[in-house]
Image (cartoon, rainbow, N blue to C red; front, side):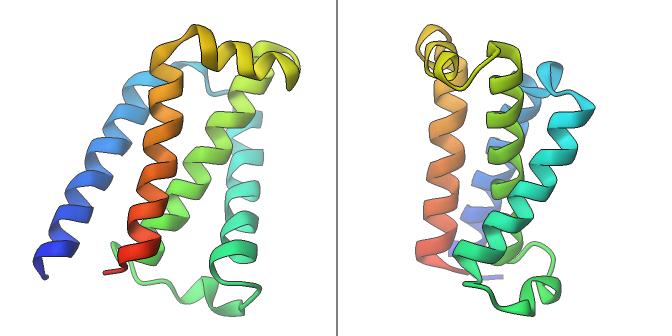
Length: 119
């Protein structure tokens, strides 16, 4: 494992831990189910660009981490929308809670790091 991969894996563990601390309590079964479906679909459409190789992702690789980030991001946004009641109130939920905004930015940043650097 090269240095970039080790650092990216450490960042992944930190973001996953922050997700578990911040968002785990508000996730419902529906948000987890639809977030997993939306995350896999988003990964298939954007990262793999419709390629069927989404099933051939090696564990702990950059593609695997981006897939997990996509699932966590979609699950988090769906659970925030459920909690807020509507998508327009979603922005108020992000504005009023700094931890929610920090988690959203860290998930997007993790996707950007793993997608752009690779590894």
